[in-house]
Length: 480
Image (cartoon, rainbow, N blue to C red):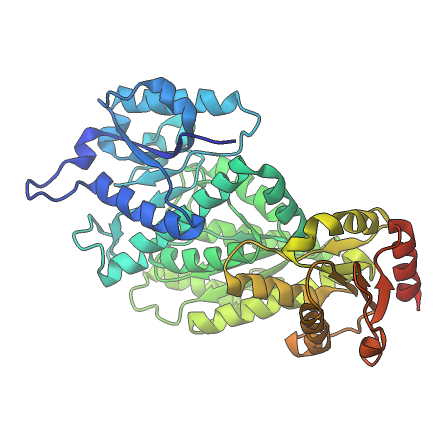
């Protein structure tokens, strides 16, 4: 689906006022920076259009926008025109079959949940204002290239750009994105909301987990009242097999009707989930990181932390670490890798096949891939779109988790085949802990010398046969 406008930014006019020094307004700055980021991830310049509340652009053009960004502020929520634009866009996307969320709310200034338009309350927000981690004081950025801006403004901008990129891909070609999501099915992780002092650190971890294909909850703003908050957190934990909690100096906000903070409540509910999981023999673990630097912690926060360390029930199913953040992230990666290997064996019953092929051979390889799936195999295939390092990491993860492997030689040369065969030999060096049950080369076109691969236990199958014959050959290889 093609749109005339990739991203439409709706804002109150006062939020883009200039200082009178020929400087662009806040919204113009935002558009410029978002355009730079999106150009990097898309590989081409996106069409981003600004629409102020008194813009002469007619509302029907909202029909031709892929993504809407409302710039939320006090002026925005008091503008009937801005709210009308949001409502009009929602009516457009609700009538569309591709109705994944296409609205990304950006905060120029803080607004509590009740102040936000009802349509936007549940959406995750991108706070583009400066927050002092110690005092909690809010300031507007005057220098977009300061250290603070790098830690907060630009980090949020990167997240926003990647999230918009994924939606634009989905809108343009939902099939390919759906295939990628299906191929790399990963566990869901509950990454607990933090106090304001750790929002940047949480964001770093969230982004890293998402880049590796994990589904992160909560995926909406947590409610401001206790009953709804508890319901949403319990639901998120039930869908997750791991929860991660970051504890710092700030105790966190206390929801309406509660006497504990959001941080405290999430940890308590996760502890309850751990006990239930243990009783019902379910997979659920917790990682709790406590900041080594608690200089500014209140007495209540210190008491909360001591309780986590001391209370046996609070520790149920949890690994508690008070280490530098980088050390914690390394431990987190190891935990996920081990769980992934264990889960891959349980889920596939030793029937996970990594079907290695090049992008130019994808169309010709699909009948064999589909036939393997129908025979009950969990088929992993390479990912072709993305940054080189990320693609390599996906390849290594597949080498760690496969039970069997097929190298498909279509239009590629034999040097490419040898490189993939070498990767299979190197798999133990990537952290693989179980033997490969079967591996084969399926070669179409010119015949290959099978003798060259015998010493690697790689059987060469003639790919010019029918799909059933090819599959039979590999099944024999698997049994052997």
